Length: 123
Image (cartoon, rainbow, N blue to C red):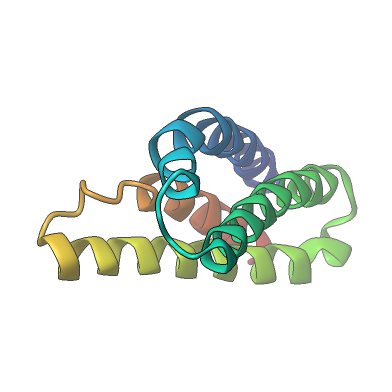
């Protein structure tokens, strides 16, 4: 089951690439160019880069969990798995509630498998 940590780490890197390349153009750049108050734009920028760091650090943690002794990695898999499942749930719920369409915020399709793989690997 440890190979699921490897898959989770690879998906984190793929999600990071999508976040950095497509997300910046489609979401971050328009927000930063908007007339929103500077404090709001900078807060969104901080959150954006915080997610970038989260993807990088969780990928590193998943690769470590893949290579390390199983007994030491269980808390990492449980914690990160819960984060990713909750992030996915948040995107899916908001997409459904605001748009009645799960494809409007498709981030959950990348986040859910990462969380599920991590949780299964930690069992």
